[in-house]
Length: 145
Image (tube, rainbow, N blue to C red):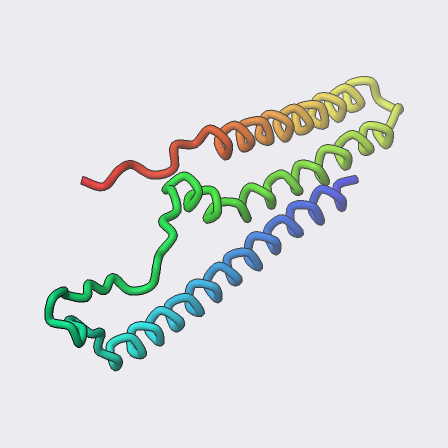
């Protein structure tokens, strides 16, 4: 049973390391793409006047979709949210299944094991509820000054 606890904890650690790695890779790719777009857009000058001198051509670039701050925040934190929920969905059944492995030799040791496992189950369930509430009721980021 203790081996399962150690493996679950180690797997969660590796999951976090892999997630951070891919966030860094994605950020580097976006920065490279952004710098590439800036260099290509600066080489082609936009017209300021048309052939007809009666009006001025106003260019604002391509149309852009402005995403809300809440949507940006949720998109940015979605991976961590799914990771936490998947951890809870895996760990809680592990703790519940370990309740059946508790030895029945010593009364005090048995109740200590039950107490620890029940505490772990309740802590994981409470943590999952807190994560759900924080993700869906978060106010994203404060408005800039």
